[in-house]
Image (cartoon, rainbow, N blue to C red; front, side, top):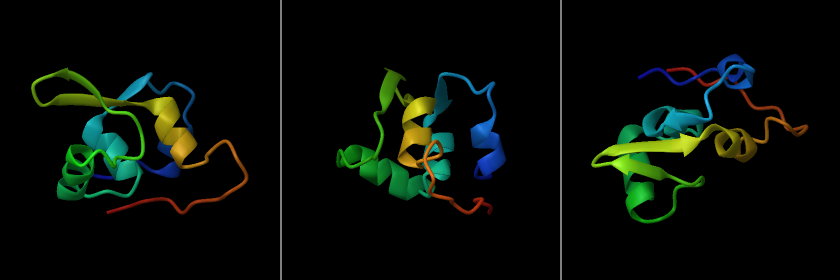
Length: 79
């Protein structure tokens, strides 16, 4: 799964929630690290469980965690 770019995250038409792994990649987590952080209760944004193995994260929380509305500049993420 390719990490979203900074431009992707700044788009005005983003949905209110993102799939868990999309949000995790945006925050710099790999797949196993994201699941480990979620299990340990250390994932940096709220995780909403919609069903067995179906999780989403609030887009606004991901943007806030990345401080995209502030003055800090982050590099685009790519892999």
